[in-house]
Image 1: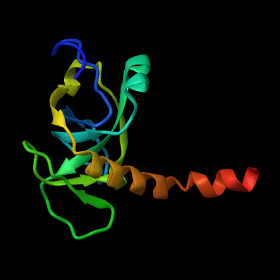
Image 2: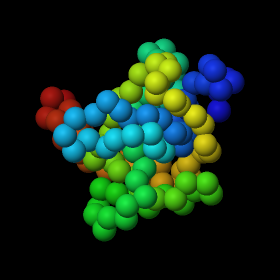
Image 3: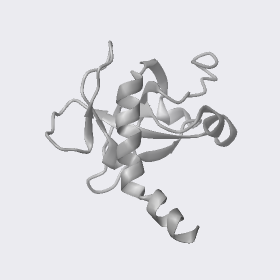
Image 4: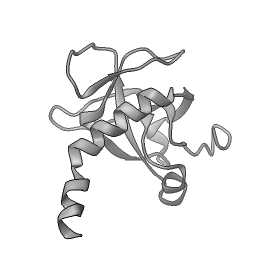
Amino acid sequence: MTGTKENYIPEQLDIIYINFDPTKGREIKKRRPALVMSSTVYNRRTGFVVVCPITSTHRDLPMYVELHSHKIHGQVNAIQLRSLDYLKSNRQIEFVESAPIQDFERTAKIIKDIFNFDDLISNFS
C-alpha cells in the first residue's frame, strides 16, 4: 500500500473498495471491492486504475475467479474489467488487503484470453 488514505496510490494485486457509479445498463454498480489489475507505475502516472470488480454472488462460470483472501469473500468478475479515475473523491477508494497471487494470476489469464493479443501480435511478426 502506497501513501496515506488521502493520497493512496493503488498497487497491482491490491484489493480495494471503490465506487463504480455512475454506470449504464448491466455494468456492475455501487461501491464494492475490486482487484487492481493495472501496474502501480500506470496507476501513479495516470491517476487511473484498472480493476476487476468482486461480487458476492456466486456464479459457476469460467470467467469468474473464486477469491481466497482473508477479508473479502466472493468472486473476481474478469468480464467487467474497468478503468476508473481513482483521484475523484466520489470514488471513495480504500485499501483492504493484498490478493493471493494465484487469484491474480487466474484473473490475468482470463483477461489475456479476452483480448487475445498474442494471436494478433504473432500475425504481425
